[in-house]
Length: 163
Image 1 (tube, rainbow, N blue to C red):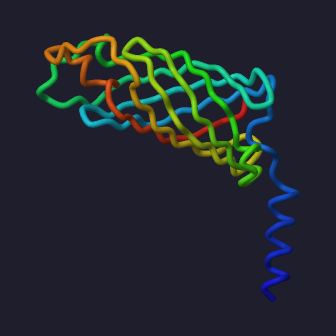
Image 2 (cartoon, one colour):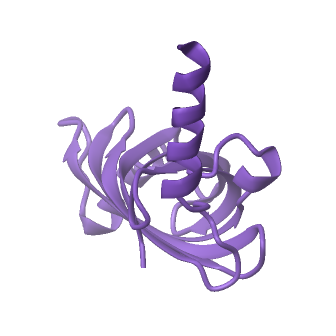
């Protein structure tokens, strides 16, 4: 019985799903929630495949719920990033439906890194989770609300779509 269940499971996954990151020309759009110590907000991401394991893109976040002690204007709440990803899900050969991507980003707030994963349930829809962290901050001015928002560990989670 165990062998039959294993064979049915393997056939189901191998026949119904395709590889998450398809390489050159692949396009992903993601929308989700952004969580950090001083704020919560929304995150939008677009990635475009340049090669078998390389993608570039943009990511934007806007902080909605901000700690009351911070006086944040639009510029403090908004961040825009150019990003580079190494899509290595197929290199690690974990699952055809799973993409794992470490990367670097250059934003209005800092130079940073991120590490994320996408899991697609169908050809066009999946979920993503991504952790981002600053490597170099542009300012050390702790009196500025922008110092605290996005200049720390952030976590994004949401839906991912193939375009």
